Length: 236
Ligand code: PGA
Image (cartoon, rainbow, N blue to C red; front, side):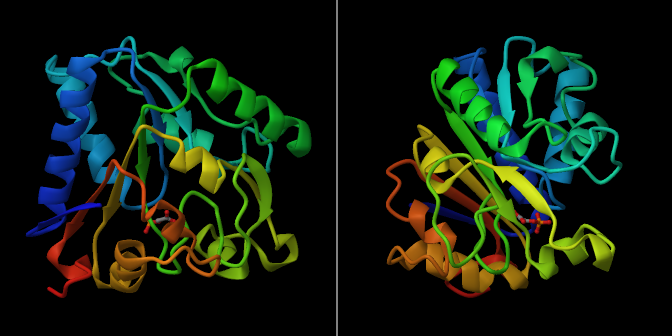
């Protein structure tokens, strides 16, 4: 694992955008897996700025979201809405090249379709990831390691973050599995803030442990972690 500790969140954003820009310049038709959450928002804004300036061309890019809630497509909480708001390169308008699980489809059928779609694209070249304070990556939650794309029930802690009303919990999501993430040719994980220190310590040291799903990536030969000082597993 290559750990790059940067002074603050803005430096993490810049380093991530530079890394993506270099990779896309080198191979414009790259297949990238995209996260949602708070951490990638400034990254997506920075990419949007670069696309709008003409410094970055996403017109041939292909993308797959890491996960999606099992919910109607027009549900304001779902990740399709998030990606349309922050990403899917608003200036580039290349929405047809970006895929996300269909949260309104039959979940079991959708997991098979999504797995096949990623394989048909030739697999993931670059997987961009956030990390939960409990070590979850995509929606691979602690306690159960599933390798393929699958449907998972989200615990209350996640449902709370999504502002899900109590009567609708547990909610479910379709997510890439740990094997899907691990099969990516390169993985770049972003983490900012002191709440991520413990998860990054497990990621940095392993061993592979279901209770910390991020440890399934510890031995990935092309894993880059971009974090700020506050999140550094070696201390601030
Ligand atoms: P966050 O989420 O970016 O909102 O901290 C991380 C994650 O759940 O992967």
